[in-house]
Image (cartoon, rainbow, N blue to C red; front, side, top):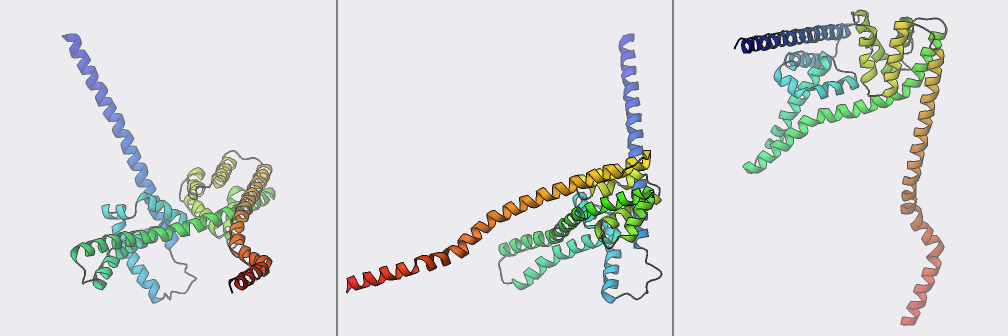
Length: 316
């Protein structure tokens, strides 16, 4: 009996210890998420601060969008906002470069307005329909209005991924050149994001966000996490890891960057050859549809005319 009591007490102590450990882990994760959320909001606010050198005049359309974004921003962090702007949508906004307070608020407001506005307009236009048709129109109208903002963001994200892949070889060459003249990683990234913003419009903005996060207290690895993963590009992930390793351990990176640049260029050549091969196959169908009828008319037209005349004379 005493042994069973000891076993029960030990099991209760183990369960209490497990609950304490789980509670500590959950509390730590909650604190990390809260600090990251506060830091992201601070970065968003700093990015939205106006430039004092620019004139304060704002167009009426911009003021209207600002009022709409400010009102919708109050709903983004609510349960309804987390449903309409889900984690997948936030990643998509990241790829579009607008995953800040203003971008999420405008995405939320656009979904609400289109999701409710399109069915209402359809019901006004087709007011003479019966109830079943009105319900069908409302269902499809809501679905189309709900998905239109995401379709637009998908197209824009695809375009930015393509531009980022095109800008990557130039970024590697610039980093290799700046590292070769003796600049540090911070100086090299600062030169790239400020002096070459016109040549690297997509990657320079991502590097600017990474630098802002680094200045606000994040480590180099944490600040480059977005740069490495936002476009789902393995080459950008490799460049991010290389920058982290150089910043942590130092060393010469000219030779690895040169080899990496050559590998990317060879990969792009192979992709171009693949596109040319596919284009050749597609052009075969175009030639068959366009050139073959004309070729048959030119080569066999006289013979067909002669046969038709002969048959017409036989008939008479």
